[in-house]
Image (cartoon, one colour):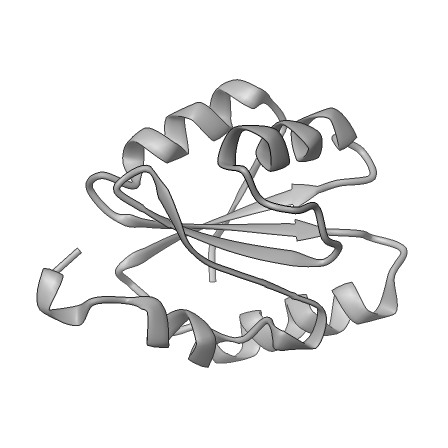
Length: 114
């Protein structure tokens, strides 16, 4: 699994635009939270989604970017949190132990050939 690190609001705008071409996942991670570390490890161990670009936000280091995500995508802030985007819209949002590759797969339209 290759994470793209998010460090700016401009990157959020860019990945929202990119979601018109390919599914985009944002994983908001708290580096001090054991549940967040477990969710990240579960994603990494099961990741087999070539049709999805994965983006990682260290929300402790980039809290303003985390706030921007919540405001611009109109999602309630959680930690950890996984947000799946397609065509500029949030199509899946999960947190804590509900974060899984299986949940992402259930939200993907495979007939779309994203």
